[in-house]
Length: 123
Image 1 (cartoon, helix red, strand yellow):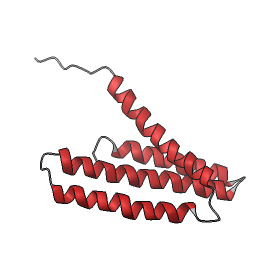
Image 2 (tube, helix red, strand yellow):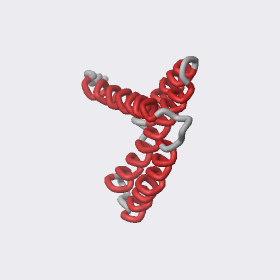
Image 3 (cartoon, rainbow, N blue to C red):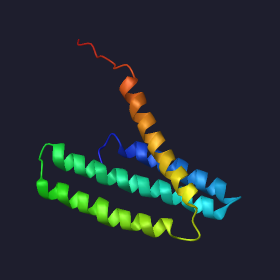
């Protein structure tokens, strides 16, 4: 995962796990869903970042792109189907956790892109 996105994803995961703990005080299946959705989306973003790095990075590699795609699509989606079929986990909670991570990451990236660039002046 790129150095720009990694801290944002970690912050998002801390928020989602915190939200999952708070929700767990009232509804355990919803809490499990929120945490699972956040973790799954973080893993998905990690895979997408790996694909982009392998494809567009300084040393492009078709083999690494294929490896990341194989990790993301068959493996990660098998995990998704296993999670969403679990009786003790709320699918709505999964959607909430997934969405929270996505919104936090996108919001942070948009805020960084819109922030004024500090110009350094030479001696």
